[in-house]
Image (cartoon, rainbow, N blue to C red; front, top):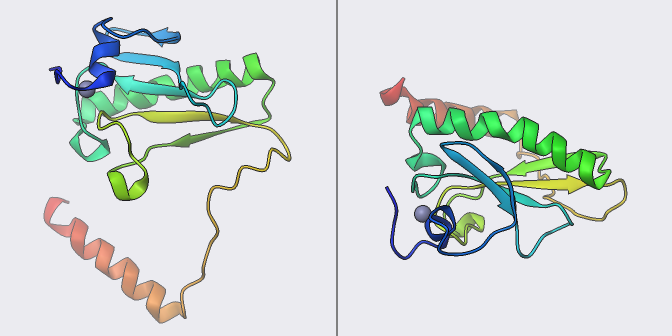
Length: 142
Ligand SMILES: [Zn+2]
């Protein structure tokens, strides 16, 4: 259930401190120690799962169920006008701690945080080909 070298498992076990904001039997939320903005929190399953793809459906449901109340509380506490939910999966996507976690990032008008910039497909055929490739990849499991 826990990985000995995982810092989030150590937080769950109380071996490392955290600024806890929410807890259930299965989920823990605490402030990020290097926040994008004050109030930036992490919501994690207490059981060790590497990322979104390693998360059993029941654990995913419990994790996502915590996002709305915790996110709303962060907005209320910070006076934020918005909130981003972000889950980074694998190093290429910026995942640093390999225990699944959702970032809750409070947002304010004009705070300057830029998430990403869009680049249109070359044409509709290219977009449809990509959609077909994703559907094909899903097909064996659906
Ligand atoms: Zn862990």
